[in-house]
Length: 277
Image (cartoon, rainbow, N blue to C red):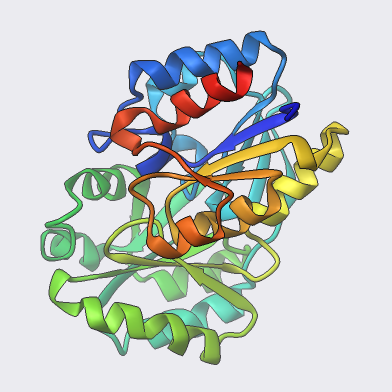
């Protein structure tokens, strides 16, 4: 195939389990860039959460953030697409989360926010995800009470997240269906072993990928996407070639065109080199 664009998730995909870029992945990104192929990080993260070693390469202009709620043009320093959650609906979600044994937060205008009292309870929720815990601590601004802050500011939210304790995994799985029934205007997905991520149903990495292909005037049939989690499913289906990582969830492998090596074995880079010939 003639590759027109390459989009890739970060955690569990481009990054290894230590949150670093395997050398083969980095070499492949440079090779694709030299071939004139646009490279698009597509992540649940926000700009401030991007790994420094990735940003230092200078290889990227466009980014898909917050699971497709935001598409950002770094060169022009502007958001070119938004699909966000209404503040009133966000407060309803928070009220529902208050009935569950979870921590929760939100992204708004490129920043993360969490109720201050929840910061003291992080250890109980991130025993299996120490690197994610570090990101949460670094990227969330504590506010006295999140619901009140959402209403006070009155701005739409990019994404909401709920975090579950390891012993509540059965509850987490049950909540995907429960949230879909209670909040049909939202889409639930996940990118880590302990969270549920909520976006506007109009967001999604797949919708963002299609929009970006149209903006750039490239054939979406030539696009390639890599991912491992539930929040990558739409992107793998939208791409001309959807690549599931070897470490991906089984339902992600089933919807992909191909399964590549794991994130720790530079699956992204090896597949890019195969496609470049």
